[in-house]
Image 1 (cartoon, rainbow, N blue to C red):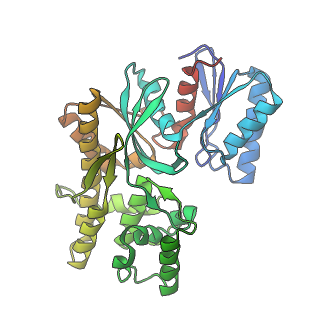
Image 2 (cartoon, helix red, strand yellow):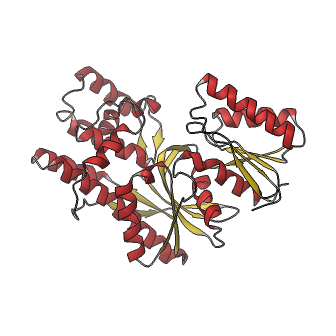
Image 3 (spheres, helix red, strand yellow):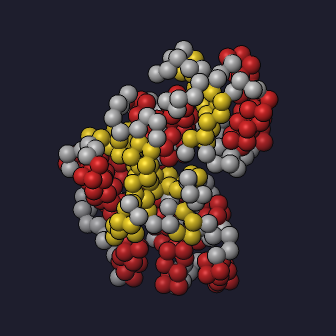
Length: 357
């Protein structure tokens, strides 16, 4: 904890701000999505009220320049000269929230999986392995970048991610999607039209659910991944192959073989509950193997897991068991949710250790 007075603005989708004063932490309400006008106006009103009443020296916010919360931080900085604004990378904030909750002193291997967060290279991240400490982080591994055709549209049309990964191989599997829609997305991919790059694990879970036909179109966020987890057969230890490549001082995880394996099992008429379990087992195996590689390379034994994907109990249980069996110590969010409601806590922790007043 710190004696600094800090207002941490949190994330944009699941917003919950945090005010810290004299080592006391006060969380705001769960506001939700700031793209909703009423939510944003409430958020802005409360942030301004906190600044006037408590006069924080620091306002911490997400690194994404397009976030409503980041734009507000810039606006507040222009209006209040005593404010220091500090941008904190989204996935680093997730891991920092775990470090803060457990008062960890040494750097950790931070595994941060979610739908999307703005990366330091300008791409969308979401499948990250970080070496994270109090003041900084290093990206040690990540999932291979994939095109996201239609950008945010894939959240509600996850079948698009199947085409991104499997291209024309999956056309017949997506038999309930219009031919013209599939052709349009394939053209978007080939010509790189509105198809930003992402390392997101959340998008991989979307793709797996859509490939299995569980959720081709979603009516709410993470509908596919939720249904995919619920479908998993118990007692299955089988998994799919994958590749880990070391390039430019970073491990890159390529899951093409996972999806090729799923496609083969579907064509061979394998039970969907078996395929769902094998997919989850593969993702847990990736976490364990990559963490073991990083642990050996950097001599770190502590692992922190955070991000919305870790609300998946099947995955979390498998990963924790595997990491502990490998001799690693595992830490997770206990007092806050694994999803974006913990972002403000991480922002607070990082900003307090930034050296700025």
